[in-house]
Image (spheres, helix red, strand yellow):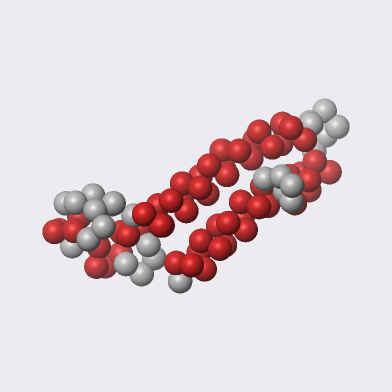
Length: 86
């Protein structure tokens, strides 16, 4: 399940970054003529960083993985922080 989530997040990143950037090119067609493509890419950049942060969290913080919530929220594991690796 984790591998599928990481693939989906990676594909989502490709929709917002060049050279593919289908979402950005779609917004370019909808936006007024005053809005340039560089501004759309700059606006999408924070969301790309959020996706990268989610990918990092799912990979390196076991307590953030789907399906592991019940086991990782026990008091002994919660004291070690999200990246304790227990």
